[in-house]
Image (cartoon, rainbow, N blue to C red; front, top):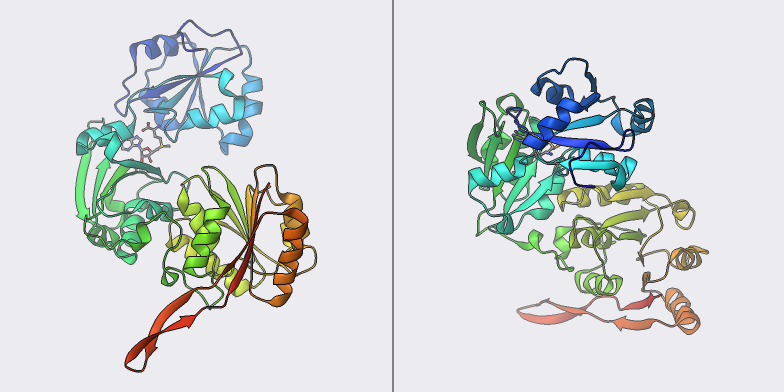
Length: 411
Ligand SMILES: C[S@@+](CC[C@H](N)C(=O)[O-])C[C@H]1O[C@@H](n2cnc3c(N)ncnc32)[C@H](O)[C@@H]1O
């Protein structure tokens, strides 16, 4: 429902976007005057003039779990919730829709900080990307870094500029230019431009709490980390040799076929490379990496953070037991441990229609297991023999990697 007639009592929350200077759309002003209860963060409630007889309620904390009880208590009263800018840009609108359903929420946006930042930078929407770090790990920004890229970052407060400056410096982009756009749209608006290296040294107290980062990565930045196509060089991953090598990884990911929003189980994750590349393929892809060895499990998490996918979930423990209770996957990669009793069966049982399974094996035992699985379930059985060049004295010769047997199945 998008018309502006007052909503039927008790059925709707109207979320109204407020500018940093307290400005509102004219339609929102009327709704705000007529509301019985105005909900919002303390900063937002302080921005709008009081209305006699109207109740003002700061959001409870933590918000999401308290919402149903709060709205039950307020049932039957006209509710307006305040948000900054566009409530659907990393804002309360999204939380309310998730908690109450789309039908129960009406949204009246104001100009978002992203639109203001683009206007100040003269960056078009088509040529820039937006990343939100609100309530999220700063390393997420690293997935977006590519030569010449323009990245707008919604932040979680003052320390973000320093953290992001440090991350970019550590990952080979000290000369990336970061503009901190503070308090956009208010009288206190500010702008400060420094390189990533300089921001890394800047104390958080010098950065306004409310800011957007505008990052410009140099066009000549060294770029291997910035490809989203599977098959990063092996050196991209800290590893102890238990790593699915580049060409084999690319082949596995081609068959795992990541799609936006989908979830991978990376079973026997080793260095985590397959699960990491799955997540890098799209910002909404998710991975649960299962790894029995605690040293390797910690390494998977480090690799994930360094390569811009810090939300990769690591489950430490042996499959199949460690698979119990995990969120169902869209695809499964078994890079190690396929012969362990129950692993292949548990993975096959977890696949849903459209699901994909890829198993790699280098031993005769795994190969015979995969040949049996192929006879029983079909799919594709492939042998991958990769050779790379190495010095032989003054000359160059081929060195074979272990031949891998790959079984893949799509339901
Ligand atoms: C929870 S998000 C809300 C975004 C909001 N819905 C919008 O449309 O701008 C909060 C983040 O937005 C950014 N932000 C919101 N208002 C801002 C302003 N006036 N100036 C600079 N950044 C702002 C900051 O990065 C802040 O940490």
